[in-house]
Amino acid sequence: MRKLGALVVLAACLPLAGCLSVATPAIGILFTDVKYAGSGEGAPSGKEGKACAQSILGLIAQGDASIEAAAKNGGIKSVTTIDHSAKNMLGIIGDYCTIVHGS
Image (cartoon, rainbow, N blue to C red):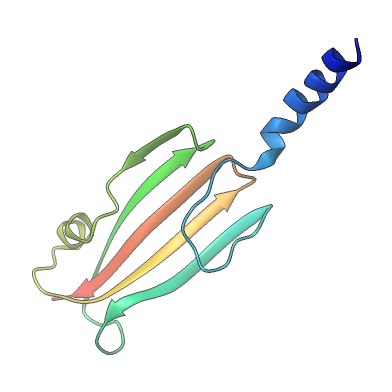
């Protein structure tokens, strides 16, 4: 009977384990909303394009957060800087975005 009780407690705590992770240099357990530098030369200027991917509970993930998709979304032919952003709410929904600047 005790083993069954322990299994029930373990199963109840499993959703609180935070099975979702979104790449970011600063991780918040309850909430994350971070923008951070990727690569490039100089300060962001010109047109901006953004592409995102989303994860739900770490079980389902979809989207295209590639540099190519971000450049296409912004009508950019020559990328000069690449930045990233990440959002995560309670490990339930996470967004990872690539942001490009160029002409």
